[in-house]
Image (cartoon, rainbow, N blue to C red; front, side, top):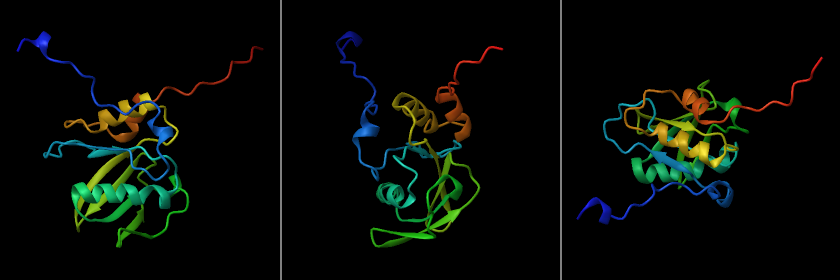
Amino acid sequence: MPDSDVPHTRPMLLPDAIHKAVRPGTALLRLETARSRQGVLDGAWWPRTRDVEQELPPLVAVLTEHLGPITRVGLDASAWNGVPTRLVVDDRVVHLDSFPVGDDTVLITRGENDHFALMVVPPDTAPEAARTAMARAVHAENVTHAAEILVAALPPLTTGPEESA
């Protein structure tokens, strides 16, 4: 079949309104699909809020479906609202550890020593910027850290007009 006869479809991207349409506690997640795990990041997560008790259970549940039982989550407590020491997700205890990893990264532990690093897209990020950042984070050979990806993908902050003297 010639290329002109092949139906072309757009890549499967989240629609712009998805972040507002889903309720808090719904996991918006992308994972690297390569088995090599050569990149710096294993995936990207776009929470709706900074409420750990509302946002982490659905993330852990979906990760458990794909990776197996999650035992620990490491995050920077200063970036989240009220971090408990543990959560119960689907009748399993998940321990929460506070590390100064920055608000742009969450560390997931499967079993005893298998770690996954997820970039955290800030909840108030515009959909196009979030999709761009998430796509870069899950690229198989990505060697860019989460903070650098977010700085590159997010529009610069605008400041008010400068006052003239």
